[in-house]
Image (tube, rainbow, N blue to C red; front, side, top):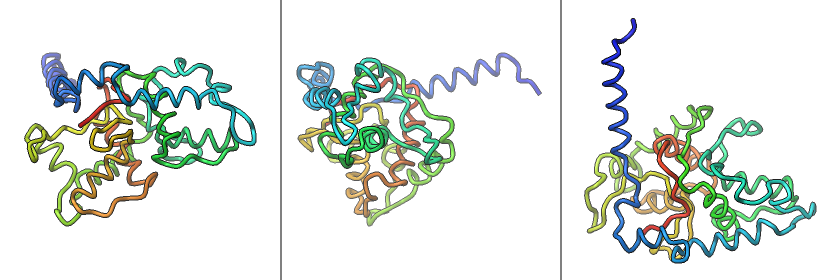
Length: 249
């Protein structure tokens, strides 16, 4: 049975309104932090971007190849970061941007991986992400099953405090915890420079912080659980503009 046009328009308007209600963590910051993120000269993450630029052209590994040898200038990667996590045919599963960079390094450059949360890997990730600033985030439809696993983890109560991600960032978003606004937790700006860390960190590091905050045992970096959460969050924030690398309190 075909729906009347008016009902289709109402459904479209409702969906658009729901999407418009989404807020990046940027919107919850004060003017000083927003200005810091907006100004490349003031954004501390720019230091990692500069390091990434140097690494991009550096030949390394047994193959003595550089990222630039295959991909050209970083500017050619506009929009690429917004498509991760993506489906990886060899794994028949998800791979995030950090995982793809590590894969290129080990397979094409024949060099040892940098390792999750290391400064060189974050620097290359920041460089690639900078090319996608302002580009709408996308969710890979081939990862629907992984996103479903991620949503289950998002809604699962964990830790001694018996809390789920959804209880804070869906149910109580916009309220305050210890004087700090509770964000909707859209993954629009990673990797981010957090004042709390005094350094750049990945989305997985932020998820790890939340898990330890509710007194739960965190997963290992690069685990399937973190990847599933990344995939779900990508779907949850699809269509929002990429801000990375961002600044957060």
